[in-house]
Length: 392
Image 1 (cartoon, one colour):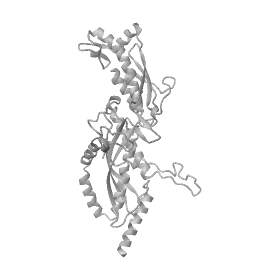
Image 2 (tube, helix red, strand yellow):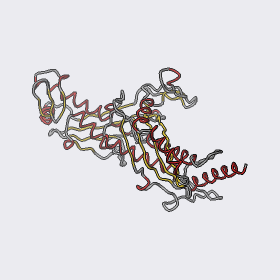
Image 3 (tube, one colour):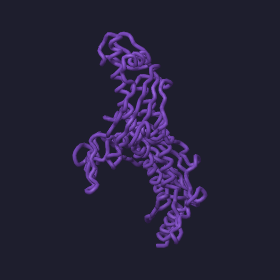
Image 4 (cartoon, helix red, strand yellow):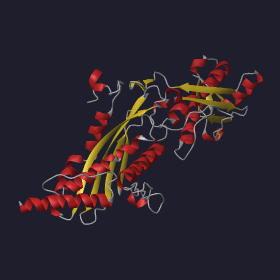
C-alpha cells in the first residue's frame, strides 16, 4: 500500500502521495530500534514474570499538510532594510512557543546572508501584515517562511546589480552570505550596498506573499488535492504493565520522523517530543467523564489528568529522516507540529500487546484512553476468560 504509482499510491479522496517515504521510514526504524530482537527479549521476560508484562508496538503516521479550506493557504510578509544593513522582519504567523519566530529568523538569515544580530523579528501585527491566516494546521513555517523568503529575494534582486557593478561581474553571480555580497572575486559589505541603494532611491522595503500552489478540494464530493505534501513518521514504544493495578510506564520510545531538510533540528526535535507526550496523554489519561445529567465532571486540573514530566518515556530516542529534501517548500523543509501527536498510538498498541500477554484464551476490549482503570478492567476480563477456560 502507498507505493509505486496510480491506484496503489493514491488516497481514498484521489490525491497521489508522490514521493512517499513511509516504507523507508518503517524499515529504517525496525532496524534502528532493534525491534525483532526486543520482541524476542520481551516474550522471554513476560514468560518469567506472571504479574507484570511488557508490550511492544510499531505504528506509522501519514499526515497531510495544508488547510482543507483552500483560501487559508496564503501568507504575507513585510521586510524592511535600513541603511546600516539591519533588517526588520514582519510576518503573519503567531508565535505561541512552537519556535515559529526562530525558524523565520533562520529563513531571513539564509536568504539575506546576514547574522542574527542584524535582523530584528517583530511581534505579529495586522497593521504590518493584514488579513493573516490562522497559525494552525502545522503550516505556520511553511506559509510564512515562504512569504518572508519572497520579500528577502526581492531585496536581494535590488542589491545584486549594485554589488555586480562594484565587483565587475554579473548580478546572477552574486552570493549573499556572512554579511557580504560576494562575487567570483572580492566582496562588498551588505550595509554598504544598503547605503548606496538609498542614495540611488532604490526601495529597501519589500512585501512578500505566498499562496500554496496546486490545491483543489471539492467539499461536496470529498475529492481533490487538499494537501501540498504529506509528513510521515513511525514510532516504536515499549511499555510495562502492573497486573494488579493496571498502571503502566513507558520504558522506551524510538521515533523516526520526516521533517524534510529541517529549518531548525532542535526545534523540530522538541516539537516531536512534545507532540508525542501530548498524544500519550490523549490516549492514556485524558478521560472525559460525564454525569448522568450530562455535566462534565473532568473539568479541572484536579479531575482531568494530563501527562507530567515523570510520564515521559524513560528512554526517548528521536531521529530525523536523512536525505529527505521536500520539493517546493521553504528550504526543503516539512511541517512538524501536529503529526507527532499520532505517533503516540504506538503506546496504546504496546499497552494492548502487554495486556494480551496476560491471557492464554479469549479476547478483550481496550478503550481509549487506556487509563489505569481501563487497563485493570481489561485484565479482569482476561483473567475471567482464563478461569472459565480452566473450568471447562
